[in-house]
Length: 425
Ligand code: GLV
Ligand code: MN
Ligand code: MN
Ligand code: MN
Image 1 (cartoon, helix red, strand yellow):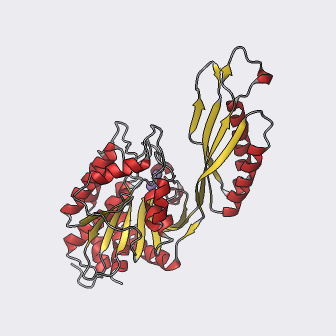
Image 2 (cartoon, protein in one colour):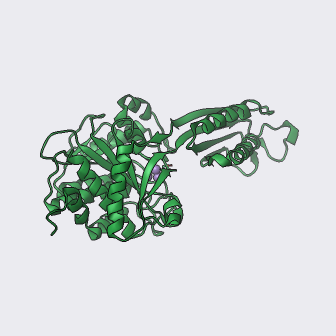
């Protein structure tokens, strides 16, 4: 063995790819689907079972486990001091139909770093903690990045607890049930000081693959806004109501949607991203005029000014419609663009470069995240950074989400190096 190697280099070299891949497969079994995808929305019974699995795995690695009021799970490897810990992790919840890597990879990568440190007999000065944030996705209870934003700003939790899923289940009740499920795990405070936070994630887009880069140094995260638009008209008979006497909520919603897409086309030069992803039609009957249509807007851009313009347009379009029904919109989620600090980018670039060089792969590439992540709220709390690995064909939020095992391995190697450097400062 190389006696001149630093602790960070030895940690990087101790990452065990086979153990990593089997940990990914084991967690993917919770909510695993025949098509290779995973359905494990936050705080569902299958998510609670996955959490138990993570607790058992972390304990087998010697970690101390804790949980906070938002059911964020923390796995702690002691340092040689009680100085503030260095945190890594991601989320274990998925979209209604997601892949096995979005989120899960970052949590299991953190645990693999701990296993590698154990194997190599490396003690770090600061404790290392791995977190599994609650409800990053926001698909069941809104908004997304719930656990991390509540960790950073605990006063948000009261409002979050009011969120209701499509079956009428209240977030607060689901949260209390999740906490009751783990009586053996001590409660810990929110907003605890952290020395740094580093999140490893799949890119979920095509940039790294197209550049043939195995690793991405994430410079920041684009801004995101979510809205709900509600069009209320009057349900009436499809065969008897004259066209010019209808108050058709679907006609109104489609007119608005068409104008929003046209607006997005006009902003194409700014790389705006617009998604009208969730629709509710009432009464949703073939021969009744829709009396109520509700749809969501997810709009993103690296330039906050573009989203300001978009919101003014939404305001105009919903208030100036020539229609006898009622239209309202409300903001569900807002986050400004996030920029990660330069010293963190430099460290991550160094870690990624060593991993890529050893594997004789191309240089790491600087990228902006199109997806949002828990790291965007942690960036308000402590020095934060992210590492990306490529996504096959750029696909995510889909059962076909995939990353080459060799790339998953390099990502964890880069994480191990970064964590040890930070934990020995
Ligand atoms: C999170 O999954 C996002 O939509 O970016
Ligand atoms: Mn994710
Ligand atoms: Mn996701
Ligand atoms: Mn996400």
